[in-house]
Image (cartoon, rainbow, N blue to C red):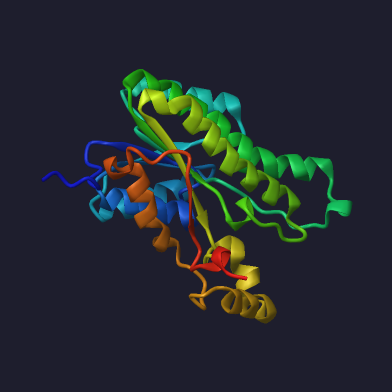
Length: 254
């Protein structure tokens, strides 16, 4: 019987994948057999990440572009077309955080977070889907958050963007499902990443996360890989418009 989780012969673009959650997801997809296209804006870091993955035996390309630059996105996909690189799997992972009370929040900072975390997923998803629809198959995986469902003080633009990711995913499913393209999302809980270093080092916040999470610990980036592989694979061909929370149970309890 063919392994439904085998991604051999497929190419996956993972945005924001030189480190952190994106890198862990890229490595998981690579272990399942996919060719990986790493993305970021630091070409040196991308090259180092690609070299490390190649040393582990994976097939890796890089695509350095800013996910908020629509022109660069269009040029990148045109370059894929010219090079014969078909993106079968897109993981919209790139994101940023900015913490400030709403009453003190500048509109420019609000817009920067929305553009990075939400608008980029729409623009890159649109470019990928145009090609996936023409081929009759494709997988889009958007990275949401616990804040796709719940709010916390001082992270309003992030919360709004990640709530938008949930609904963008459903909109993608509604429009693209008939063409053989599935769009789903993953909602990570509190993970051990560079972006969370200050929170992890804060004893009060660290204690709150561990007490609030049934698993009583922070998540590891590699713990997202299995869900990503599943959603990218033929095992999930009838799964569309869903968000799966990988959060140690946090969102399920009071």
